[in-house]
Length: 188
Length: 198
Image (cartoon, rainbow over all chains, first blue to last red; front, side, top):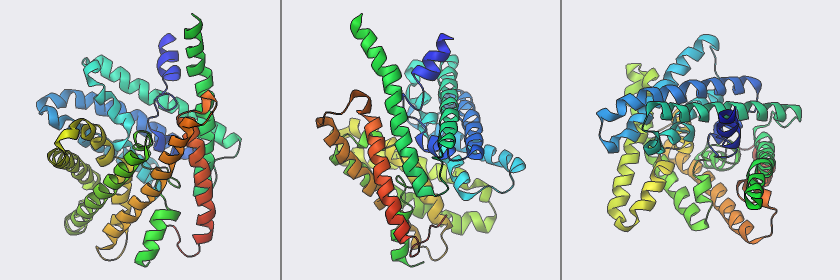
């Protein structure tokens, strides 16, 4: 329970760490895109690290980042192929954002904190907590955006509404978790 | 579509950050100062041009004729990876006293959503090959037009008495939302002249 609270809420990948923002933002525009992006992230991020962790030692230290990028591209291609079985015609915009998963900070962060993630278990825990935290935040944000009618069929207006909503959500998150924690630390 | 139309569409009506929310990765580090924002936006534009042109050449003369479309993304990731190594090496040679800074911004500049999206969008554009670099310049210009004002706003916000909860990202996102609203108004006016590409 403490792990869930700390890793998924208090150190949430979107609100606390600021990762996966383009995906988070596009995903929340419709329920279908939220589902597709959530499944893409849950598939690509852990699978990339599960394979990359074992492949990276075969290459020089300087090539590891390149290998990680290639493996994430491979997983996105696999995901796109599987998705075509369920959704034969995918819009260019959705297809583009699925591809953005491969260059997202959600994929790269567990690699950049590698010295702390020397064990396979640690690295997978980082990858899983980041992707699960992202999906949790995406679900909540999509629901709120649809409930208050800020999804928007107009892309430009939808983006403006999303930016504003994200700003207020960040402020609320700061008040709830960061400032509160700081105040508690100060009083003790 | 004319080259001017393409430039206006990708810089304004299809602005990568304020309309499509792409390329937000370099947003956080670049918004600390306007100088850093200038550097990151210009470098990203440069990388986007190189990657888009190379990807368009490979797609037009190798991938499509051989029917290897399913390898497109893998090829693009390889080009981005090579550009990451190449640019890191080049800038380390050119500016040997800023190695730490180069190491910090190289992944942000070369492997980000703006570069990926620009390469994918410009390669799909109909017409001759010269539309690809023009499209990449326009997308880079769009990134520049979003990053630099936001960095200036962020700098200004550090000296104003904002409530604690609105300092940092929250304030920047709200400012970006207001900028996006302005752009949405401009888009409405430009929509008839420069329709969106996708």
